[in-house]
Length: 151
Image (cartoon, rainbow, N blue to C red; front, top):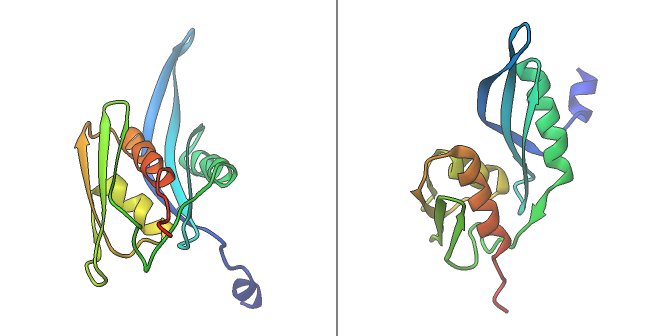
């Protein structure tokens, strides 16, 4: 019990998608799992990764370690983003708008996963174009990286 008190996670993780993938080899088909994981510190720092493994837990653990290495930082202003931003990644486009305090997170599945672990408490977001989860998460990351603080 004493160990649980000291073992506090520095990042909150969210498994967005786990997919079973197969490849054809000489003896038949080889099955693996692909995991899309988003993690953040709820203070404006967030990372994502897609990794494969022999089982689900291995894929998730690989993705978590990779996501920690490629984290980005973005500005937070009173629990929301500083300004409206629209970003595109391949066929996916996302629109992120700041919202007043108390609005909450109004966003679709993959955007919601990123926004919640990033620490944004009030935002209005819309996915435009493709519904591919990996590309939508990457579009959100592109949008967050393009945010600037107005001083």
